[in-house]
Each structure stands twice: as C-alpha cells, then as structure tokens.
Length: 288
Image (tube, rainbow, N blue to C red; front, side, top):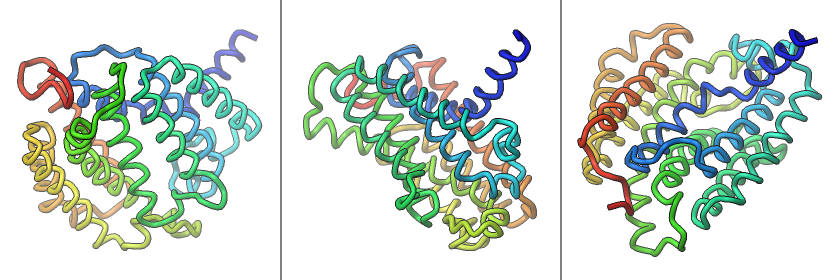
C-alpha cells in the first residue's frame, strides 16, 4: 500500500508538470528584483493555477502528445482521466484558497491568470488551438502575470496609473522572451500537432516563418529591455536572437528544437542567477 501511494503521488506530480513552474518562479523573481523568497501565497497560488491548467491540457492533448512523444504517463492513459480531473479540481481549489490570502493587486492578477487558463483549455474557446492566441496566452500568462506578481505581490493598496504603466513596460521584455521560447517549443511539436489537426502558431506559420518569428521575438525582448533599462532581457535577447539567426535553419528535427527551447530557458535562468547574486540590475518596478 505505501508503495502504491508513492506511485500515485509521483504520477500526480508528473501530471502537474512542475518543470514548467520553473519559468514562472524565475519571472516572479525577476519582477521582485530577486529580493523576496519563495513560498508567498500569490506565487504558490499561481503555480497551482498553472498546474490545474497543465492537467486539463494533458486531458485535451492526449492524441497530439502521443504523436509528439510527450507526457507519457498522461498521454498513454497510465494516469486515468478521472484522477486527472480530480487533480485539476483540487489544484484549482487550493490555488483559490491561497490566492484569497494575497494582496489586492495580486488577487487581481491571479484572477486574470485564472481567466487566461480557463480560456486556454475550455471547450468553445480553447486558445491553445487558435494560432496567435495560443502564443499570447502563454506569453502573458507566464511572462506578464508572473513578473507583475513579483513586482506588486506585497502591495497592500491599489496600483496607481503611473505605477501600473511602469510595471507593464518593465514586464514587456519578458513577455516577448517567453513568446520566443514558447514558439520554439511549438516548432518542436509542429509535425505531431499538424497530424492531429491542431492549428498552433507554428502550424499556421510553417517552420521557416516560425523560426524567423522566434528570432524577431528574441531581438524584440532585447530592444524592450534596453528601453526599460533592464540588462537581463537585453543580454538574453542578444544571445537568443543571435543564436537563432545563426543556427535555427540547421535544426532538422523536433528533438533539436526541444533542446533549443531548453537552452533558451537555461540561458535566461543563468543570467537571472548572476543578477540575483550581485547588485547588477534593478530592484524591479515599484520597488525601492
């Protein structure tokens, strides 16, 4: 029985896709200026919301995930659909409970995250199946909301217009950076998604134009970072954009694009870690 319980926990944890929480934690740290520790209610609430969306997405994407050889436990039915539905519901309830303890600006952002997540997977809307909208939902859901939660999560008041504008401008480079990485992941999944009838941004654009779009988004992240005086997206955007410009047309298979997306994420985490361990960079929008 203990072993069976351990397997159940491991399978459930896999379904929540905790590896995909890493970018959200990193972007939260970027917004906060890396001065606040993890474990705050708004961050935990966001991660649980993302987990619920990942589980719901796994249920909807079993066919294409099998084709793309992703999410083996869920795609092949090792974790049953009933357990996945229960897990998504439990994760959502826990997220709402934690979110209720957060500050007013954080609650507003978490509500926005919930709306994005619902629209991403809900039948009839399913932004994940709409080219362009799928990219925007990921970019804003991870890049924008996670960053602003870090920046505004501890505020015990409403965010004023000037402060809101400054925060949105500061989040912009990260939104484009997440979009670039997301598009690289979509290119890796393009053949399986197309065979399954999915019309993602990469399917709609085709591989050549999707490669160019990912490179443009990376350079756009650098440009917006320069305007925001934030060295993290500037350096990351130059590295990612330059690398995509030189190497993207040499990647010939989905595994190569998966490695490229992971490398792009790893480069961002490394640059952010350097800033975290030094005085390099700013404290984040709205912070002194």
